Each structure stands twice: as C-alpha cells, then as structure tokens.
Image 1 (cartoon, rainbow, N blue to C red):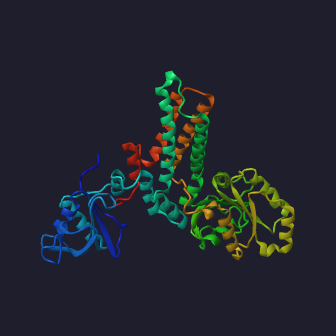
Image 2: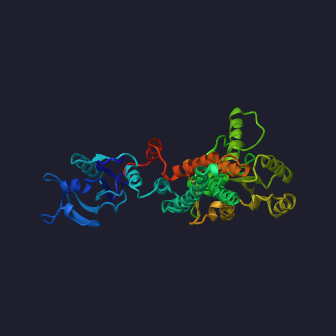
Length: 466
C-alpha cells in the first residue's frame, strides 16, 4: 500500500548556497503550501492555480515573514512522484531552510524518509525499479562515462532489454503449459528446435548483460589501475605526476611505500582509480613484507596493470622481475609496461629493451620520465586506449548494479537449465518451472516482483529529499 501522507524535505545539498529547494509530495501538498504562502496579489491562492506554474510570494507564519520565495506547482499524475508536488525555492540560509521545513511539518506534512520521493515515483508507476536505482547513480556520477551510463538506464534502456526477454520467456512458457493441459492427448504445440533456439538466444543475452558488470563497475567506481614494480623505480613519482599533486612520499630510500595508496583522476571523462603499491623485492622487514603481500592482492583486482621498470638498471634484471609479475596476471587484464627514466637511460637502453622484450597480446609499452613528467600525456592516452570504458557507447546496455548482476546470474542459471531440459526431453513441468524462475529473477530487477525488504535496502541509501 502507498502511504497517503504528504511528505516534505529539503532537496538541495546541505550547506549555504544562493538558493535552496524544499519539496512537498502528496494529496495535501498544494493545500499545505497554501496555508503558509502569501501572494502579493490579494486573494490569490495556490489551490486555485494551474499545474506547471510558478508563483512569487512570501512564506509566513502568521504575520511573521520567513522568506520571499518562488513556488512551483505540479499536479498528479504529471509530476516526478505521480502525486501533487510543490517545490519552494527560497534563499539558501540554513536557518531559513529549517524554519520553512518546521513550518511545513506544523501545517500537516511529515519529514520524508531517504529516497521516499523516488520510491513513490516507482510505486505510482512513473518508473521501474532499475530506473529508480539509476537516479541514485546519476546523483553520484563523477565522470562523463558514469553520467552517460546512469542517464541511459534512467531513460529505460536496461528496462526495455529486460522486458523484451521476459516477453519471449512468456511466449515459451505459454506454449509449454498449453501442452500440459493436453498431456493425455500428447499434443505438441511448440516446436522443440525453435524453443531451443529461442532459449539459446535469451541465454546469450542474459549472460552478455551479466558479463558487462565488470565494465559497468569500472565506469561507476573508476577503472582500477595498479602501479607495480620493484622498489625505487618511480611508482610514487608517477602517481604524483598523474594526480598533479604530492600524494605519495618520494625518496631515494628503497621501500618508502609500505602500504597501498589510492586516488581517482578523471582522464577525458573516464575515472581511473590508481593504486600505488609497495615495491616488489626480497625483504626481512615484516611491515614491508605485508605491503608487498598487499601489492599482489591489488594486482589481482586491477583491470589495468602499470608495470614500471627502471631503464637505467640491467635489462635482464628488469625482464626477470616482469616475468614474475606476468605469472600473476590473467589474460583479461590489460598491462602497460612503463619504462621509466628514459631520459637518463638513453636511446640505447630503449632499443635494447625493444629487441629483447616480446610483448603478449594484452601488453603495451610506453617510455617516460616520471620525474621530468615527460610522455605522461602519452601514458594517459594509452590508458584510455586499453580501457574498455573509452569505447562505451551511449546506447550500450551496461549493468553496474551488484543486485542486478546477482539476479542476472541466477536468471542465466535458470535459462541454461531450460535448454538442458528441452534437449534431454525431461517433463514439461520442470522446464516450465525453470522458465518461470528465470522470469522471476528478471522481474526482480525492474520491480515487477518485489518485496518490502528489497525496496527498503534500495531506498535507504538515497539522500533525504530525493
């Protein structure tokens, strides 16, 4: 049941600004706002005004004027929540905001819960659950790529894909269950070859969506990039050069970095989460050993690995250490081998490395001087090139939500059982059950099937006022 009470909240971010916006939503939203709004035109009341109009006036508690405001009126069902909505734009003083909020609550509204405006939009059919979650992603977006992905999902790109899949599944289950009704006559309404082909196509699409989660997670949280290499090869200097600030301590003393240092930078609209790790070497220092252990942990988690080598050191030594790291890198990870101190080592060292270092299919090579910040721009371009995020298209349907990924994984397992069941000729009852299970998990994503617990977990992470 949808709560019929009228809710109110401050919708702008906490703090002082030029203006702030307070929002009301519910059957009594316009009536409550009318109790405290006074128009300069005598007798002009908000309840008599048309939808989608703005009105200048004052908010007053009796004769006490709290602020001059602009009030916006939206009427059901043509509003964000699908209910009557009033937005009051006032001056950004925190004192004024709190005075207005208290006055609205005295007049009959209650304070909204986190995400309650968006939750009402979902419950009133203004958007599905995946679109509602995209609202939170849009608010939290910190790069052009994450913004594009959230906008695409909020517009319903992901929902349309899921709706298409569920409709195809419904077609399959309808034919199979029709056969169950005529089981004694042994009538076959669905061609098994066509059903298998259809189920295979659905399985491919579901697994493709689930596989996009690693890309979606990188877009949403930043592409994880681990900077690894031996001690004192310039990893921290490179991090500082990329960030353009002294984030990491740089010293000629080996083993200065003993823990993992992380920071995020934006390169042409794509967020990269850089991880500076402890230098790899044999050591008896317990603290440094723990740092090296964490280096290998972060190495496994990175989507892109920047392996740094000091070109002024013997080439054979550099390649031997690189080979040790290569053993811990998967084929799915992209590797950029960064030859540092190219200005000191000279052309001969570069030519020798090029001739003696064969590159794997997932490896690129770049020569820089981290200290002098030479070729850092080239390295940035190479990061964009090896990152899948750079090729992200606005029309692509990308999964970035862990809840969606889990549901898609379970839906994929169910549809794979359907395929196996059709091919092995098991009873239609079992095939039908697996199809319905697949539909169930797809429905969980959009909210076609939901529980109060799921809704509570989703909307509790929203800010109050949204």
